[in-house]
Length: 90
Image 1 (cartoon, helix red, strand yellow):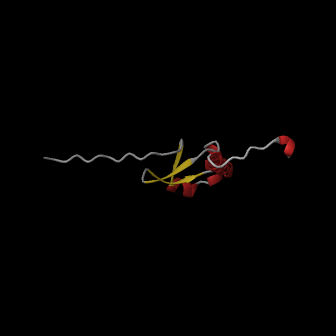
Image 2 (cartoon, one colour):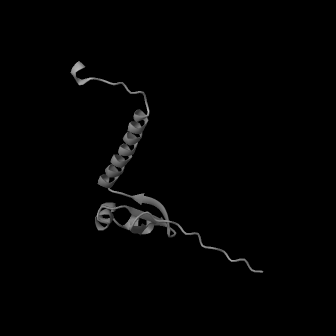
Image 3 (tube, helix red, strand yellow):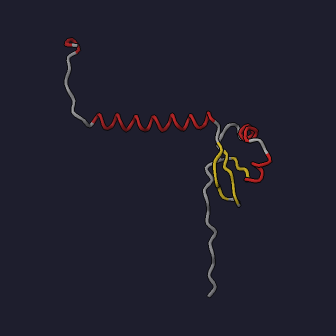
């Protein structure tokens, strides 16, 4: 009986892709401009090897991560001990 081999499907988390060879030939700034400032997957043998992103896109990711961390901090503090305070006493 002959075995069938399955191709492994690789997710690419970008709408725009460029090969390593094309990356060598082009200016990364121009690639980002053509991608509209969005994420670009750098492919090696048709599989994502790296991602190219603009500073603006990277900063947006950092802001989202910061919001997640702050949200977790708030959740943890809401579980903690509370103290009833009268505003007139302050």
